[in-house]
Image 1: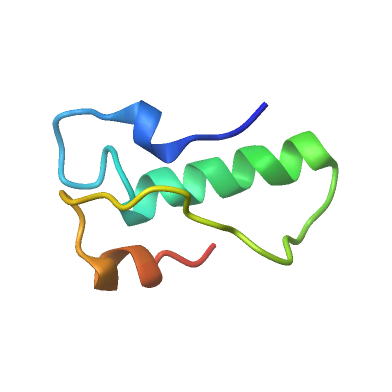
Image 2: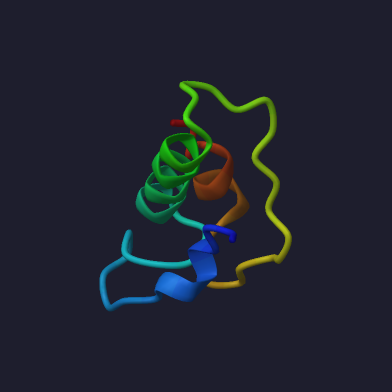
Length: 61
């Protein structure tokens, strides 16, 4: 099971793709699923043309 941020597209600017809010939600879901409080790596598998690279990189949880 993965937490795919691209699967959660919605209308608002922070509501989908590789923007800050969906990445944060996916990280929180992964932490809960793994039963831990940290991740060593969060890897984006696809480029999101609707979100700037700067926005994606700033999305640390």
